[in-house]
Image (cartoon, rainbow, N blue to C red):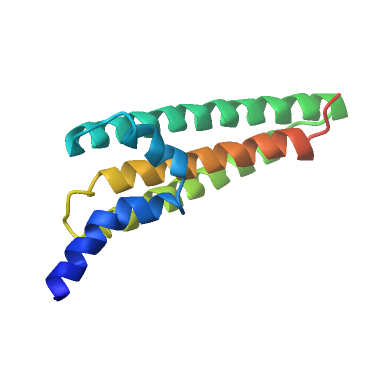
Length: 141
């Protein structure tokens, strides 16, 4: 009975997790793939795309900080260094968290896919954070 419950949980894990960690990261691939290897490859691609969006948002935030500092007649060195430091810490958190989520597959077929989906979800969330800061914290002309 215990083995059945564990197998059932591993089958449902991606479905249940999608409600919590970026349903778009899961659903984008679930609708387009029919095999587990295709699904994992698709998740890796959406994770890469989310990382690219994160990098764009990071670059835009740095530019906004520089622009705002120039407008104020200030040097943005302290603020930019704080952003770099915070991002390094955030990346360490993201990677550790996604490793944890991937380990929840307990060696099942979701290994790797959980990591990519988590990476996608957290990266999109962080890109949203950067967009919010750019739009709401830094005054726009």
